[in-house]
Length: 196
Image (cartoon, rainbow, N blue to C red; front, side, top):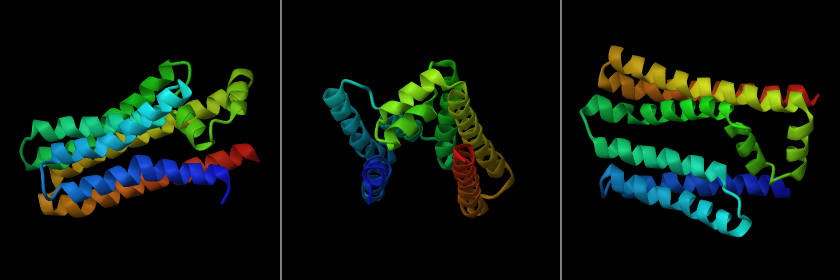
C-alpha cells in the first residue's frame, strides 16, 4: 500500500471511524451529548497535534470536529421525537452552508480536504496559483458537495413531514446513502475525466 493510501486510511479511521465507534459504545450508557462530546475528542486532539507539529491548522479535522460540536449542541437542545430524529439533518445542512460559504475565501473547503488526502503535496499550491482551471475544479466540487449536503438535509426534513416516524427510520438512511453515494460517484468520475 503506498504512502498516500495509508495516510487516507489513517485519516478516515481517526476522524470518522473512531469517533463513530466511541459514540456507539457510549450512547447506550450515557446521554447523546456526553457520547458526542467524547467522540469529538479524537479529531480535536488530532487538530491540536497537527497545529503544534506543523504550525498549520488541519481544516479537515477541524471540519469533522465542528460537525461533532454541532451534534452536541443539537443533542443538548432536546425537543420532541421529530426534532431529535432531524438533528443530524440540521448539522448536515449547516455543513452544506459552510461548504458554499467557503467559496468566498481564497481556497474552498474541498481544496483542504484534497490537500489532506494527497499528503500535503507542495505541487497543489503551485497549481492553485498558476492554473485557473485547477481553481475552477475545486470550486465546482465545493459547490456540488455543498448543494448535495443541503439537498440531503432538505429531503430528510420533507420526509419527516410526510412519513410516520417508523417509515422515516427506514426511508431516511436510504435517501442519505443514495445522495452521498451519487455525489461520491460524480466526484470520482469528474476527477478521472479532468485527469484524462
